Length: 247
Image (tube, rainbow, N blue to C red; front, side, top):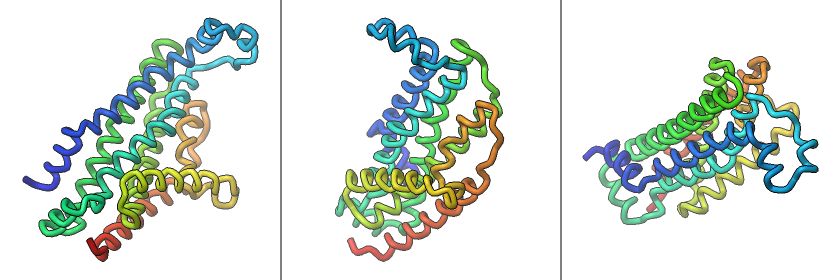
């Protein structure tokens, strides 16, 4: 059995792929529903006085509602799944077994790729549901803007997965890897408050889809290029550190 098939079976049998799919699909359904029926929901909950303060929601808000949840709970789920895959040294017996059968590159590559594929699939299913739901309940948005914006979101997920691997090369505990990764991502987003560096940060990718579906121009080339370079560098550092780590 190859390591690629082993990783596929691990994702399949633990149903971690299903967790990601369920999370993103649920938000894909809720996003358009919230944008369409929020005033009715507030009224039914006894908040008639608050209805007047709710801004008029548009079709773009159907996608924005999905993206907002995907960037929080969805991202958290992806990081935990990535940590379970990439922090393989947390299980000493499994680590010794894998290291005696293959190189670190051969071990890490399928784990990176399969995790990225599962996250991308889950996000894609969610955005398709959100796009169709928004079109049916509100208005059909520009498909090109949604596709380009979604590619930016996927690229950010790749950054998060690569960062998870980098953190796993420093610590072994799976929950610790996931929580520290999330903490670093939050810290990087806060660094984005500094105007001189904001345009180069991967966190800038998160606002891309919302800007595009609202008619904005694509101005994220620096963040895209920086993210690609950062992913490559983090993967290289991760492999180098894991090769030198003593089990």
